[in-house]
Image (tube, rainbow, N blue to C red):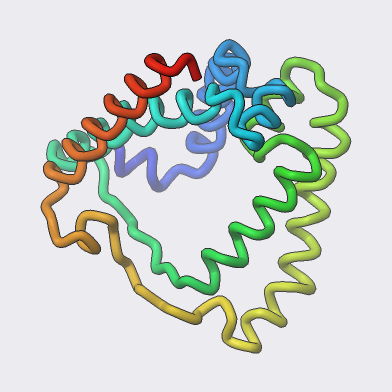
Length: 187
């Protein structure tokens, strides 16, 4: 069944759209589509965004690996490099600092009617992607910046030389500690 889904791009697009609606709804209900929540996170006063992200990771990580064990999914690890990570982080950070939204929260904010997210966010993402693809990427690629510090298809468990179950357990325990810390100090 999942192989058929993997090979059918139209169904993938339809599922992405249909699952994106509840995703945006939950982002909005979690209040991470609010500019104040994003700004509060950046100045370390409102940790709503971290809480929502960690919750998604703590549910998604074991779920993906369970589906992998059952043979329902195949992980396609992408190669990475320090250079491409730094460039991507800088672009993401500049966009976040200028607008106050990341791509996911910008789309959720558009769904709730925030015009700044529509005109600044969506238009900015499209313009930024075009400039990156046509101007910046060829220059960075030509200079070899994106491949500096190439670490290949390395996952965190491989990097730490531990098995996936240990990594998942460690991350869950860290998440529990983090949530306890946030609640204890009212963050």
